[in-house]
Length: 81
Image 1 (cartoon, rainbow, N blue to C red):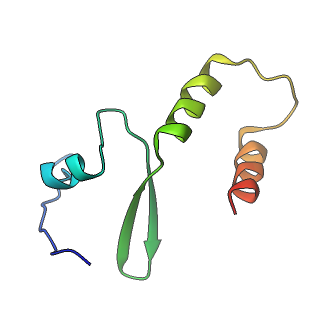
Image 2 (cartoon, helix red, strand yellow):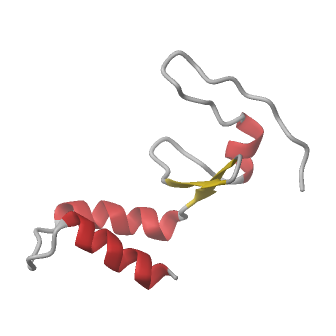
């Protein structure tokens, strides 16, 4: 595990990921991150370029189904396990 860094929650309740970490993980503006809570920890995981491209492509598609957004989220969760 790497050394911990301290960041401050801004007025807008946002944090800045330090440049060193952004560069190591190749995070750019618009990069997608998964956020998870584990007890008293907050875990951020980059989704990776493949999933980012998938999200971008999905925005351009019109649904050809009758699934609700919640049903689609549930289906995606099951597929990613």
